[in-house]
Length: 250
Length: 236
Ligand SMILES: Nc1ncnc2c1ncn2[C@@H]1O[C@H](COP(=O)(O)OP(=O)(O)OP(=O)(O)O)[C@@H](O)[C@H]1O
Ligand SMILES: [Mg+2]
Image (cartoon, rainbow over all chains, first blue to last red; front, side, top):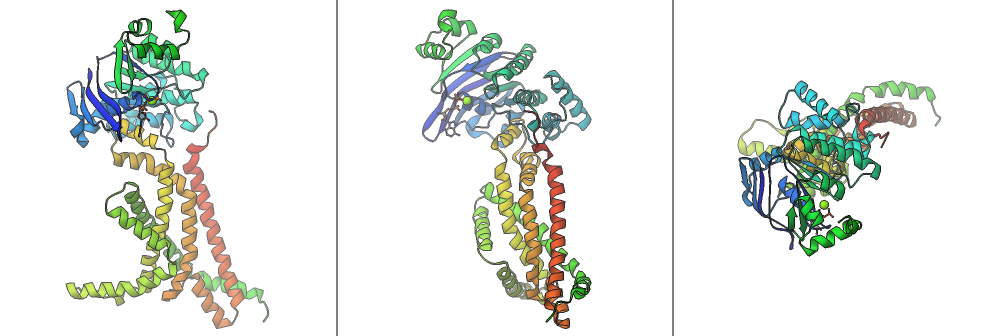
């Protein structure tokens, strides 16, 4: 169970997140939708503490943190319970696929090398990269890099994985392979919060859809609720814009 | 005066003896300079209060003044400082027991530190912020992210410039003659003036420097090839 309570964040005088609250049950897949600049990335980054929220509370399992007075130890604990899959993959360029996945196990978990290795190999096989263990990111396609990114996020067995538009930097023909991997791990019951513009995918994997605009949650519900029967005008507008065909789908 | 080709060879072997002196100055100043430069660069990158202003002042001062001037300042200034301290604290150590080459080590390390800090800084800035965030996102501390992720890549990116710094310090070490250290160049001068064959002796010295420089470049290229392997794309 992940619980965000009244998270706020400003950049200068611009309030990007305004008292956002969101709770995600264990095993649940929550998809966040919203127009550009609505604060989706910022929200995910706050959960991972890559961005420091001005105020609010984050609770994961029995761990609880008041963001305004977080200590170094709290931040490290929070980060170990969460993992992030980045839009630009952000793989460690000087490490092979295998080393990318092993890194946190060795450095953060202090796991013996042999164990870290076998676990990482298994994860890379799971994302379909068993044959690319020793390749550097510069020799992998975008889709392969993102799958390494997903394996890296899985390695520490986080309580929640945060995906920030994991396929939006990919060539269209590579999107499918990454979505397929995300679908697989969603089926395993891993808790996920996913920001995406892939509507078909969102409908498919989401247990719940959250629509954000202007730093607040405008509407949330099951994919059916939000896609078929949006209540709020802003949600309707957004859906019309992002899926022109929605008019006749409904 | 006529060129005496055979003397070039003779001088070559007489100058050869001074290679260890030149190399020791180069190696010491490069190693200490690298340590100083790394600390200086990090202090500035992480904007450590007070220290980062001091670091900036150090770098601009050193880069704004000639290396020979650094040597002379250290040569004349350091003894005053040491003897002054020794007197007030009652130490028995006096500056006269510092060997001449010690002044070259100290001053050139300070010089190299300023230049190398800029090289390390540029290397660090070449590592994209996203990788550091990825390191943090899996729970690494800032120090772990620095040690495991950004610094190794910064070094790889900085290698060509570091090699240039090493060559710069090799050539700059000739200035040590100013405090009567007999390096390759000073030895050439001795050989030249005792035989009155200046051109031949300096030519021999030049050849030695050229050879040493080529060796450094060669080594740097080999290291670069190994260390930079991850940067060579293939697919994608
Ligand atoms: N580091 C920053 N400094 C200043 N402003 C920022 C920063 N990061 C984000 N913002 C601003 O915060 C707002 C929300 O940005 P955010 O990236 O969270 O939006 P988003 O919903 O992820 O948008 P997109 O769909 O384009 O990715 C934007 O107006 C953006 O300009
Ligand atoms: Mg975004």
